[in-house]
Image 1 (cartoon, rainbow, N blue to C red):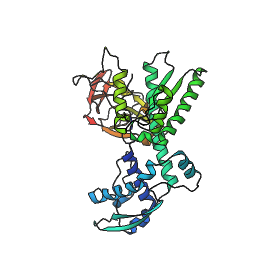
Image 2: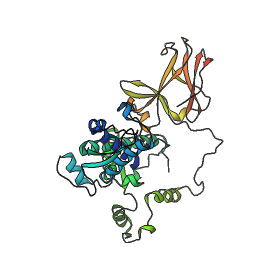
Image 3: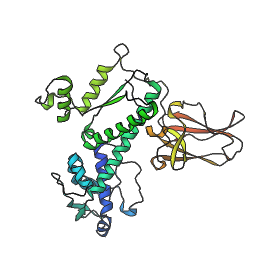
Image 4: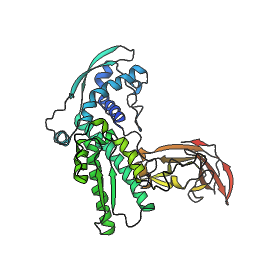
Length: 369
């Protein structure tokens, strides 16, 4: 078994997505809420525009409660989407979701801590589009990690890739649809490169669901549909048991020593035409071993170096949007005709060195990413 490293999207859980949806509902109703002086907190998600609502974005406990109150009203929408409802929303047809109203009232706090009743309107098509975009982005990131592993580690005899959906968020039909869509793209790309159709992806439903029970019956002949819920393995326990059953019995599960070199978390690169292009891949960075970032021909002798960085697997594909990366500027001495090199200090800190004729002549402060 091969682990895809820690390149997953740590924000792509149900609670974080709900906060993101609540943030968008606040935006949809901003003029009305602004008149009532109702403020909002920043959702727990990356790449949030903190200037979007100016002084109406705060971080007190009451303000966070506003975000959570709106999020709780949207919970049935997120949890009960099915293929028919998704189609109805996209086709502008009528639909019903148990426990969810497209227009609802909520008691929210103004900036003085006074509760006020607010009428909120929800654009379901906009929220669905946002959800699909975030989930498809996460799945694309997954397959970028898969492609890297396939290129480096898998032998030519591998003809099937098994995908086990796990975790509560994977129960969403949007996740299944995103994987099916990405799977077809991967197979199409594989066929174009090799002119072969001898590879397949097998997607397994999240354990503990009716769909999974049906799949288990088809694959094994065992009917577990009437097994009490507390006796059934769930998505999370399934991951653990899968690792234990699939491991190399002689070697066990490898646990890195705390004394071993830390694995660097980010790819480092630059922007080219709105996309992130990696100059140094995370796997190649070792503590205190400098690697070239810009040659003396590329370097203009500036007093700072801008480095784009990302922990996403898509970072090594040259397709990641630059807005989905982070930026750090590192102060340097103004020296021309030097190679600019970077090394890591630990798993998320770097320093920059200027080299003339192979000799280090300047070293920056350590910067944490």
